Image (cartoon, rainbow, N blue to C red; front, side, top):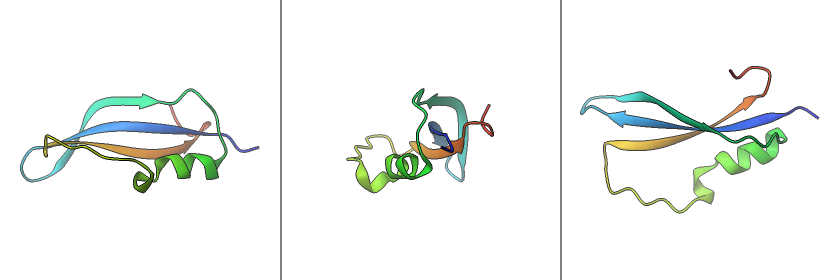
Length: 67
């Protein structure tokens, strides 16, 4: 099985562009690419954004390519 990890990264908007804040969460569970992509699909989440200048990004990375 090819193993993937789900990474949640935090981004901030400075008024003209989105900038990575340097913070991220990496799910410790290894999973298939299909499962990871399903979890990363933001349409599967209820989103509450009270601050338009911060957002989360969901990405899947092969376990060997991410460090």
